[in-house]
Amino acid sequence: MAKPPAKPDSAPPGAASERLVGLPPLVTPATRLLILGSFPGAASLAARQYYAHPQNQFWRVLQAILPAGPHQLDMSSYENRSNWMLYHGVGLWDVYASCTRTGSLDAHIRDAVVNDFAALRQRCPQLAAIAHNGAESHRHSPVVVAALTEPGSPPGAPALPAYRLPSTSPANAAWSFERKLATWREVFERHGLV
Image 1 (tube, rainbow, N blue to C red):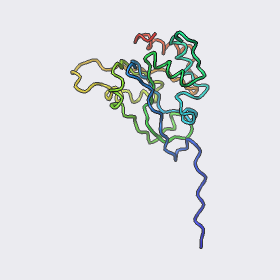
Image 2: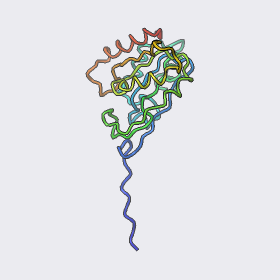
Image 3: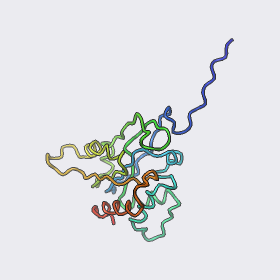
Image 4: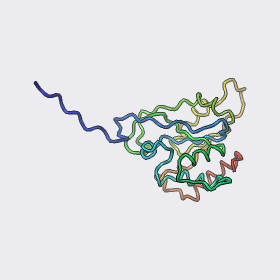
């Protein structure tokens, strides 16, 4: 009796043949600014934490913008960082719910499925703005804004503002930390978060 052909080695994490599923949203009813990335990188998926790559500047940017509060912020704890961010009215999610991708670069995202933003609308009644962390996320701005706009809004009502912010990814080496920080801070100030 012939043996069945051997199965090829399983694909490494993040290989294009494997369907990757993103992280749940970090939001509360007090969320006023929703920051959207494209899709978590390999380090974030492995840790099940947003912006887990040690060279991603996301948490460092937020720490430079938002006050620490009455207690010293323990930035080594993901739970503390997340709760601190949520306390300040900032939420976090990604544009894509799932995709295939080799590595962590946005350029390698294939077969992406956009998250259900309409379902998020009721969870964030105070939402005042969207901030896209990078160009890939911002490509979907019209779809996101339309999904988060209350049905039955009067024609001509102002749309939810959406901003394209420079990516905090280590792949965005063209922008210095200081330049990224200034651009991010401007949006936070515009919406009264600092």
